[in-house]
Image 1 (cartoon, rainbow, N blue to C red):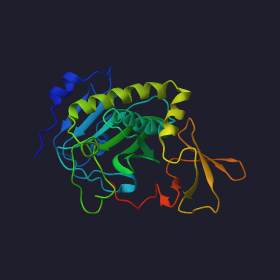
Image 2 (cartoon, rainbow, N blue to C red; image 1 turned 60 degrees about the horizontal axis):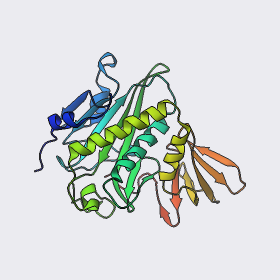
Image 3 (cartoon, rainbow, N blue to C red; image 1 turned 135 degrees about the vertical axis):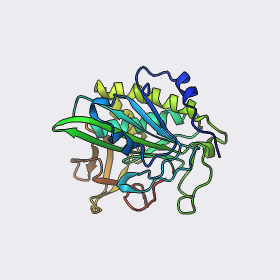
Length: 276
């Protein structure tokens, strides 16, 4: 069995200004998202990070199971407490984008995003996000972004072995999880500031990382594939997908409403691929 996550070593390495300074380590838990949901509002600190070495009931999008070998990967949730009550979809995409930037420091290949929440290397899934928001009336109470990242795992179940990968598999060497998490949090803190300041360039940076950007593609809208092509022209400031149709009108789609289909391969469609 691999070693437990070294919280003391991670704390000494941490370079962020605020993100992750409140750090909760759980050797085993059902779900880090679920754990942070239970913390009373008055006690929850903006930027709290909860990490576990063994997530027994990890969830991906559409309640799919997240498979992660204990003590080898990164499974954690960040609690944000923004004052504004909008653009959370863009925040989730921004966090995913920031992780691709970090992973590319270790790899020769580029890392991309599969709409809406998967992280891919060479067409295989290395990680994913699950974003959940709770409100007090119209005001946001917390935005929880759960992340699962395959770091040191090299073997997967037969069901997903052909579509899953890890940083160790792709880089051909081990990566220290404490160092990796420190880099990820530093990158996320930076992108959060850009999101908070409504940096217009951020949505462009995100768009370029999403599979299918700039291409004419098919799309699945609420389970229906329209009989025409759409050109994926990026995301807007709300994190909505922008598609140019064959009549040259721009259509906007909300976060979970649309799946992108490039060529003959379904790039993102619920229920087709198990979560890893």
